Length: 137
Image 1: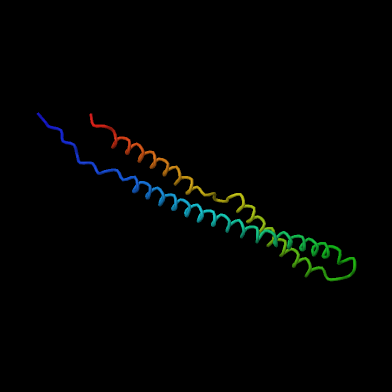
Image 2: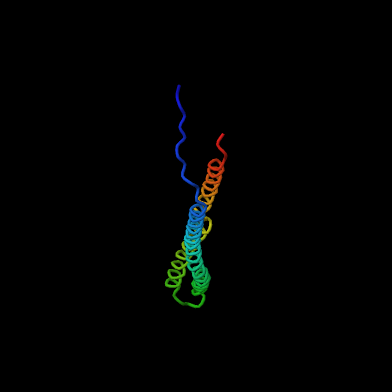
């Protein structure tokens, strides 16, 4: 007949669990700050490019209007058309990129996934502590 031997269990140290939990919380905050910083940096860069592009687009329309009216006054219209058209194309390109970037912002998914994983870890730790402290039958 086989005999059952219990493995020696290590004593549960509440301070160690608390220390791991505080370290985990600190790492979560650092991850959240890093992801938020990247999100804000992308947002600020996009806005910093979109605002001057919108202003340049308005100015380009004024120059194109001047090109359209210059034959009436006998002025050369070609340089105005080239400058206004070039600025219009560049401004529309930057505004299109900014709109695409706004619609494709990456929200802090890693932080949320990590928080879910940490909750699972904490639940496992609590279950483990409950089974370690249960009376031996």
